[in-house]
Length: 293
Figure 1 (cartoon, rainbow, N blue to C red):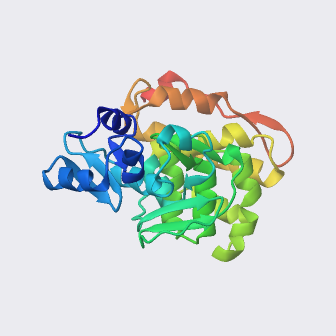
Figure 2: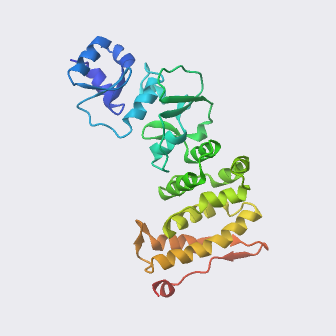
Figure 3: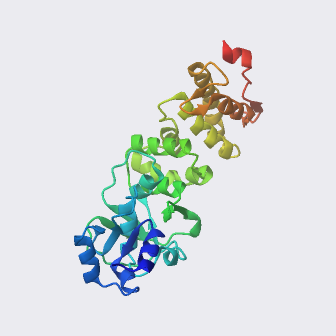
């Protein structure tokens, strides 16, 4: 029978543990192999197991890959230095459940070289600032903004990138729009676009008026004080987006795609913009009578 302490450790690690961790509780590799043959354990990857009695976790394989990079230390110990191995790229998007990427294997940023025999694990040597990392499903993951920038840097097609941004906004994930805009010029040349055109591609992909309104409102709230070209872009875009939203859902108290229409309209009406002549103007308020027509 396996150690109760090991069972408790695994329960604190989404049901997953390593043979190196088990050894610290006096459990040998031979004992683990026998337990696996008896059907008490599931083998997730070499040296990483889960208790069969535990319900399989959706991202169990990602936990196993991350644990395998430093197998002797526990989740709790590893998270004291969260930037050492960070989930990134398409694996990060998968954990956030945004975009339509089909990630091959598991991708991580690492602060040091680490040999791995697994072809599924891809490590990139990069030391991230703490502000580019946050905890997602118990793992250190690149922030949504950093994930978007990384995937742009990898050259994914703009349909995939537009869906990524739209999904991130739809899930209320925090996007640092000023930073995104600031860093777009270094990615735009690869796509054969200006930075402004790349911003348009990323922010006008939505399939529905609700999705489009969410993206534009999220962006607008952070970019009111940015340069003249972006102010003009937002000033021109927001009214038409709100009109489409009203036309799609004529009742102000209705819910479209699970989002209250009235909340989006109120946000749109509250934003004030500066037009290309530098004169402030507000989005014309749509009265309840007009919405109900």
